[in-house]
Structure formats: structure tokens, C-alpha cells
Image (cartoon, rainbow, N blue to C red):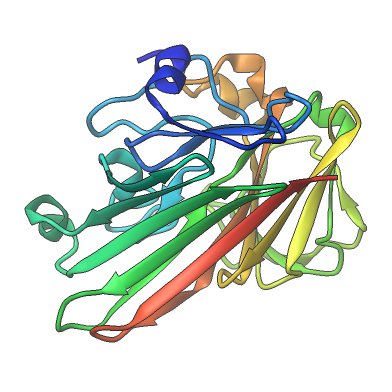
Amino acid sequence: MSAEAVLDAAVLLEHPSGSTVRITRHGAQVVSWTDAAGRERLYLSRDTRSGADASIRGGVPVIFPQFGTGPLPKHGFVRTRDWSLVAHLPTSATFRIADDDVSRALWPYRWTVELHVELSDALVVRMHVRNTGDAQFAFTAALHNYFLVDDIASSAIRGLGGVAYRDKTVATTGGSTASDATEVQRDAELVIARETDRVYVGGPRSVSIEQAIDMSSTRVAAEGFGDWVVWNPWRDAAAALGDMPPDDYRRFVCVEAARVESPIVLAPGAEWTGAETMTVT
């Protein structure tokens, strides 16, 4: 399915200001957010794939119950499954997915995840997880935002200065990733100039992508997550991706509200909510 087909099939939200949002049933993924001036704020690859067991490259993928690699499929399994649309108003929509035989074959727990998207003068995305079984479980999660930029070289991420991060691009002598290579960002702003894959442990409530689109900035504030992830594959890694034009690494940066370093633990019947609010400044 092409990017155009993904957008055409998506659920549409429209605000009186002129801003719009589109969300797919596949993955409950926000794939477009245009501001009141009609400017797209999210990146969506024109070569993206969609359909059964495929992930959409761009927008806001929902990551659950595993961030990154591990015993489960990379970034979990809800981003590659169809969700149910349980509520749809002109400026909001709610999607739901629950465990089934397929998910329990991979991860033997009972759960529901709801994603609520609301459009006002900001875009709010709220992720709600509930343990519906009789066994405790732990999970990691993220909202994997792909923010559109005019040019990665002229944009900067502000708000993470002084925060410790784990650099996932650092390799050991043997060529494997040194997962415990921790540094502190010294500069007030991060300018992406090479492959970047960082997990910031803790950090501020909000960060911003400065000079993202037409000199305007995109600000994202998070609640409930606690960590931040910044990712850009840069030239070589982008060329190896089959669902992205090779030069598109210059057109986006992923700045993600995440819970990576300390998993969330839910007892039977317990619930957790993580949310982010995105605004144009």
C-alpha cells in the first residue's frame, strides 16, 4: 500500500482552526498532522509498507510491549496489527486492541491498550494499558514520533542538555553494541550530523525541534513515560532500509516519549497511562 493509499484509508479529524489529523486502523497510527497553516508536521515515507504484519514507516507508531529488540518482534506487535475504532468525533478518536490467541502465543498475558487522539490547538495522543488477566506483567513502551523537518542540518533538538543518555551506536571492540555506554549531553541543543540512536534516561517534561518547518518549531511534552529517544539513521543506515527513499534521512528526526530503562509493572487489574502533547511554536 502506498503512502497515498495509507492516508486515504485513515480516519480523519478536523479542527475549526484548519488543522487536521489522520489515523490508521492498522497500528492505530497517527500518519499525518497538519497545523492551522496547512503545514505537515509528521514525516511519512512515500515508500512505506502497510498490510498484515507490516509496519508503517512514519507518523507515530505505537510501541508495546517491547521497545527495540528482544524476545518479541522488534518494537512489540501492536504496531503491525489492526485495531478497533471505538469512538470517532470530529476532533477526537479512540482505538482499542486486546490480547488474542496470536498475541498470547508470543507473550502469555491478558491486556488491553487504548489510544486516544484529540485535536485542538495541540495534538494530544494518550496511550492507556490495562492488565485484564490474573498474572502480573512488565512492559516497555513508546510513541515513536517521526517529526518532519525542512532540513536536518538546520534543525536542532532543545531540552536535553545535561541529561544522561545511552548511545546505541557505540560499538565494542568485537563489533557488538555496548548497551551500557552512557554519556551526558553537554550542549544545550543537539544538531544531528551523523547516525544517532540515543535513549535519554529521565529528562525534562518537554523538548522541542527548533526550526523544523518554515522556521517554526515543534514542541512535544510527555507525561507518564519518563525517558526520551532520539533517532536518525543517517546516510548509510537509511540506504539499507527498504521502505524509505535513501535521502529522506534529511527530512525527519524521531523524538520519542518512551519508557525504556525501567519497565512498567502492572498487577492484575492495574492500569497505566502515558501521554504526549504536540504543539507548534
